[in-house]
Image 1 (spheres, rainbow, N blue to C red):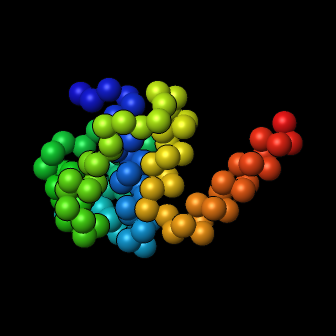
Image 2 (image 1 turned 60 degrees about the horizontal axis):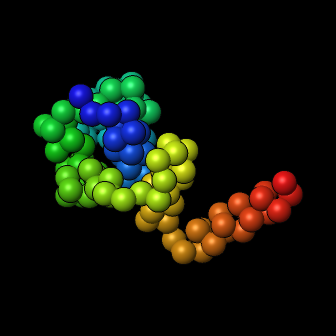
Length: 112
């Protein structure tokens, strides 16, 4: 079984790609051949790790190569899970959205 940090990273990537495709967990599960929405939730929240066959079905249902779904990067900037999750959530977002998030973070940091 994968380490928890890898499970979190894959789950976060699955959630990100699903949302970018405009799919609910139920819709993704149906497109992937009948995977229950509860299972998709478990994958996204790293409570369960999908096998390779399931990853292939999920990536096909989202419309991306499996390598994009499991592209967790070899070098995230930190070992802290919260920061890794933040980086994964920001990947693929439009530049304006990233700028807004950075501005919000700056304001929070400045506020102490």
